Image 1 (cartoon, rainbow over the protein chains, first blue to last red):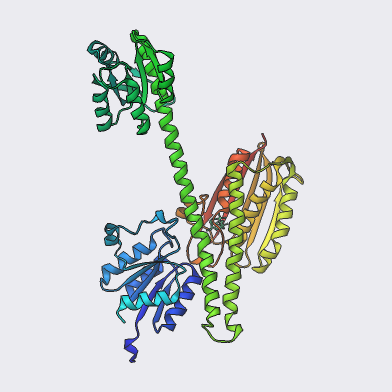
Image 2: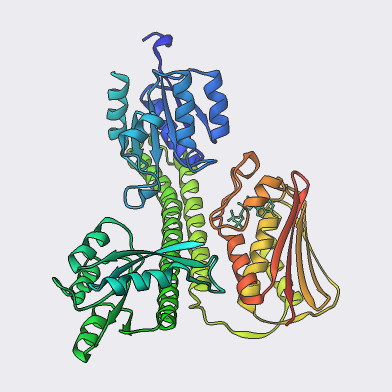
Amino acid sequence: MKATNIKKVLIVDDDIDSLSQLSLYMKQMGFDVITAESQKEGEELINQHKPDLAIFDLMMDNKDSGFILSYKLKKKYPDVPVIIATAVSSETGILFELNTEEEKKWIKADLYLEKGIRYDQLKEHIQKLLKI
Amino acid sequence: MATLKVLIVDDEPGIRSGISRILQNFTVDFPFAEEPFQYESIEASTGEEALHFIDSQPIDIVLLDNKLPGIQGVEVLQYIKEKNIDTNVMMITSYASLDLAIKATNNGAYNFVPKPFTPQELKTAMEGITKHLYLRRMTNKLNEESRKTRFQFLSVLSHELKSPINAIEGYLRIMLDKQVGNNIDDYEHMINRSLERIRSMRTLISDMLDLTKIESGGKKREISKVDVVHLAQLCIDNMLPLAAQRNIKIYLDSNKPEIYINADSSEIEIVLNNLLSNAIKYNKPDGTVFCSIKEENNKLIIEVKDTGIGMSAEDLSKLFQEFVRIRNEKTKGISGSGLGLSIIKKIINEYYNGHITVSSEVDKGSTFTVEIPFN
Ligand SMILES: Nc1ncnc2c1ncn2[C@@H]1O[C@H](COP(=O)(O)OP(=O)(O)O)[C@@H](O)[C@H]1O
């Protein structure tokens, strides 16, 4: 495989443990990984790089940081798939109703995942998104 | 002026128009309500007609005759009760038998006005029913709000508890699958991080218990004469290991050797511990913490000042609320629950009738000041 074929993933998460775990797995899957630990840093990276895939934590500097990043990334690169990961789950998740079509349109993320998902499942989702 | 809709249900046109006329120029004002009330009448000559109005628009008050040509007043009342309609009903009835009165009361009628009545009697009855309606609606609204706040609190709390669990679970899975090889030393960082997350979860849980104890009033308070200077010295001694890790010095100063206050010493200890540990946590290496205990103008003044990272004006405006943590480059590696300051504030406001203020400058340091009157 030529070096130019290596896909780049941008991961933004303010939980350093979840960030380093996700990075580890993505590296093992063969990705080139760039990371940021806040919405602000994430915005800077979006301006400098075009990733092939982005994974954003939902609650960071703001309660909806993940949505904001997703919106900004999609505006610049509409074709880059975005995954939003959150520890807010369905039992308590009335904070964020992600289910209506209307909201999905605005938020524009391609996939919502609950944190703590198994990595083999994550891998499947990513392969589907990137069609690899 | 708030307008309440009154539905008058009576088969005698004279009574309906009479009531409408009395209500037309009548207003009610309560000292506790924001604005006075006026009334807008709608008239119905049968129970069936009344139900139609009740179904098609919000009605605040129903003045209901029992003896009607078709269905009876009590049946209208029953319908309102079954459908749980937010309206207050007053029976206007020529002769209220005990039997009817009981039936109506069981079905939620607020009051009875016997016919015939004078304009003044009607007005007095309207005042009563309006007050009842207003208070009931305010109570519902307050309950609804506190339910919402509670729900929000629990949502954030579950997020705060889930994050460390996810992190620890993630590390355990990595280890289980031997993702970075067979050498145990290569996992040391993950083990240490897991332990750190467990530690901070434990802090969160104990902070949360403190908070719920205060909020539910379920904590048994033990009031005695507490020497705050002495207590502060004890708290500082407990903090020394934490301070030594980053070579931070702590000084204690007071304008009298002993300053007594009637208090529950565990509460004052929570206040001191939280302020001191923040002053260390958010300090710079080799920094300093000044703690001063003073008796001034019949007040106890506790001041904790540090030479740490400080906060911007925008940060300051968010402080003292549950789960608020300032997130930036400098606070990145520092763990905490975001409950400490809200606990302090609750204790000082609710138990000691005092208050807490803060002033701060980015990169220079912060000063938290607690003032408690010696009642
Ligand atoms: N002495 C201080 N200097 C700078 N920032 C502080 C100080 N004390 C508190 N803070 C800020 O206020 C936030 C809330 O404090 P607190 O409620 O005690 O929660 P915690 O320390 O557990 O995060 C902290 O996260 C920190 O950002």
